[in-house]
Length: 448
Image (tube, rainbow, N blue to C red; front, side):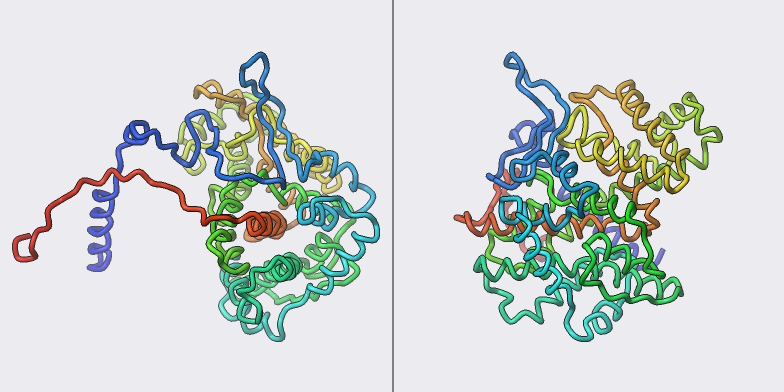
């Protein structure tokens, strides 16, 4: 072991000794770890009129698990998807709803689309000088760097008036697909030695269509592919306000920081594997199951392998069946329910019915396997990540792009929450921590 490694190991041991807190101390001081109690209920840290989640109902005075529901500005997200599905692309329409609190009429929707189209441009040579300058397989870091660099091109960067912030949000919503896709192509060219493709977005195409067109070398895609991706973007656009990256958005906004710094902070939160990277783990887990279970129709064999995963004997040895369970939802995740029907349709079109049947089987068996091993306080069901990774793989979207696509959707929700926080902001969000530190007498250097 090298000298520097030994030194760092010693320093790490000092950190572990100095910073370790006994688990029972959290109970002693009634501190809710992760801002959630033992039953998974979150600490209320604010008010919002943007979205809401439901996973329980009060029946005869008792808190009872129910089918999950998600509302955007008072509208059931399932009904919103039904409203545009098969008629038009919904990303822009639902984006308008989240930002302005009402569904647009035809004139308002047309005007909003025109604004996004006008904003869908990067500064001169930005792609060459910023995105291609230091390509990385970590596209979330590339995306964050690009966002922070865009601040240098904005003369009104620190103006936090609602009018100015709205303009900044419009521009970021519009260019996020470009930043992510161009970042991927730069990485794929310089690090994987593949051809470079920089396709300019079309003014005539929707966000989902442009994303697929810019990503694919031949620019080709089917209407079904674009419609499924559009639905995925809508379902990932916002989620109740209590998720980690949205809370980060509001915390940093409350300090008076600029839009670019706020969104960079949200991106840094989202890239964590416990937040935005879960669908990647689902795909990797499924690949291992497919490689190690010879008969995908054998329920006993699939069940046995799921038990191995849960017992830390297979996959990443962490004891998690990825894509199962949610911090809030109990009986079902409404986003997964919407997704499933579209996934089946896409799987049929792509000739991947066998894969879909395996996913459906695991969706059914995994809750049983988990319930057999652990006492659970609420239902366990498939979450949106379980199927979204499968969708992206069928759309031939590379793994490196999975979390950036999440960001391309969630930037709308972050923008809505930033604006809501600015309008209602009274004080900086400053949580309290209970100190358990022991006081000590100072010891002079020559006496230590």
